[in-house]
Every structure is written in structure tokens, then in C-alpha cells.
Length: 329
Image 1 (cartoon, rainbow, N blue to C red):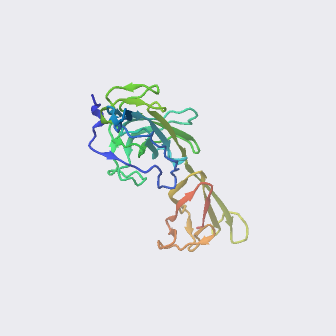
Image 2 (spheres, rainbow, N blue to C red):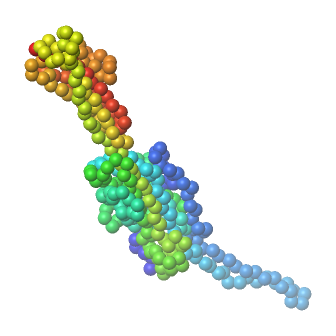
Image 3 (cartoon, rainbow, N blue to C red):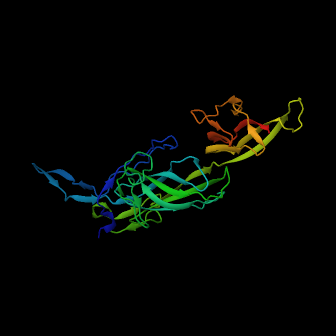
């Protein structure tokens, strides 16, 4: 009896190589020989003489139906994907049906691997429905728990995504791997194991060299960043000294240092003009370059109440410096 799980509403052919820069292409494995269900037919003939007569005869026809070979290969397509603590990440894999008949595969993603600095949380597995190499929410089909892939034809591939969450407490530079395993729905096991009547075309299905199961790992690396602020002050009074007397000018310097391999966004430095002082108009600078006090097209704004400087995105290893002056009343 033919395995009912083989009857899916649609079949999918996919590209073996991705199109994104972070995807690594590998040569597709080829299916083994003649397609499952093909009938190999042969009839023998013989010629002879009997006295003065000659004759030709044919044998009965021998028909052999090619059984289905169950084989699969899985490849990880993501090489050291950058991720952020507490954020989402998408890992890409390719599943190649290296058997000789259409087959569906059960997928299992395991976040624990030897050598992991941390383990992600696996949220779901999705099919690259539009075959563009990028996970598109609402477009790419998310497989339900325990659901198999659509049928994959012999020699065809299917790209899938594993959607994960990175724990928020993971430090910068830590790495993790996720293992995706594909197992033929029809069956798996020791090579040569046969499943009677379960193959394409009504024949048997035979487990190939892969055991009808294959696994591959993808890796990700956390790129985090932190910001530290250091504030300093220098004084110059009207007599050329550094005594803080009325009329002396204080120059404040604020250094925003970003550390880590990632970057921070929407970085803004704010400071309040301290009581007993007055802001010195036109003294606001970023990295030594003057900023206007008005809230205009440059990064800064200043008033009698305080200063604000928009630093935007800042990469790890960078330091931005804001300076401004106040006068002691």
C-alpha cells in the first residue's frame, strides 16, 4: 500500500544556492540513478535454423519497477550571522533530496550544540515560499509543530529558515550553533532498510547511504555594544587662573565611548545647565566642530536650560566628544 503521507497538494523545486551575501553556496548532490517508479522492460530474441528452415522467437517480457531510494542532504547556508542579545535572528538551510523520487521531510531544529557559548530559543521553522533567500513574514510558510515539508522532487532543493531568539543576557562576541535535521517521512534507518509498497509509483522505498536523514549546523555571533559617559571640567577665570569665582568660565567635556563589536543607535547626549551658571552662547561643539545653538539641521541644540547633541549610530570602538561652556554667575 502506498504511503498516504506522500500525497501532498503541491510540490516544490528550489534553488540549491542562496542569493544573500551571507549565504554560502554548495554544489548540489545528485539523485541516485533512474527515477523511482520507472519500468525497466526487456524482451529477449533468438534465431535458429532447423534443416532448411530458419526461425525467430521472442521470450516473455520481463518488467522491473525501480524502487524509491530515500536519501537527503542538509547544508547550513549562514556563516557567522551577526545577532544582538534579546533580538531575533534567522538562520538559513538547504535541504536537497538526493534520492530518486519525490519525498517530504520532517524537520527538527536543536539549539544545543557542543561548544556553544549559549543556546538560542527556537521559535519556528519556515519555508522560503517565494525562493528569494530572505525570510519574509506573512509570505513564507511557517511549518506547524510536527508538520513535514512539501514534497521535494529528486535532485531538487528546498530552502528553509529557522527563526530564533537570542537571550538578552548574552555578552558581546559569544557564539552559538543550531542543528537542523531532515528525516524522510516515508522512513529512515540503516542503509538498505526497505519499506514495502511505500515508494513512488507503488514500489518499495529503500533507505540510501544517508540513512534517509541528514543534519547541518548554522552559527551566529552576538555583536553587542555598550556606552559609557565620562564628564570633565576645566576652569578659567578673568584673572587667568583656575579658581571658581563669579565670572569664571567652566568648559565641560562629555566623552561618549562605545565598546563592543556591535553598534548603538539613536545615541543622544544631554546635559542640564547647572544652577548658578549661565550658558555661553555659541560654545557647543561636537568632536571639536562648532554646532549652532538653534534646533536646526546640525546635530546640536543649546539654550539656557541645557544642551542636546544627536550622535545617531555609533560603532563599537568609537568615542564622540561634546563640549560647551558656562559662566559662573
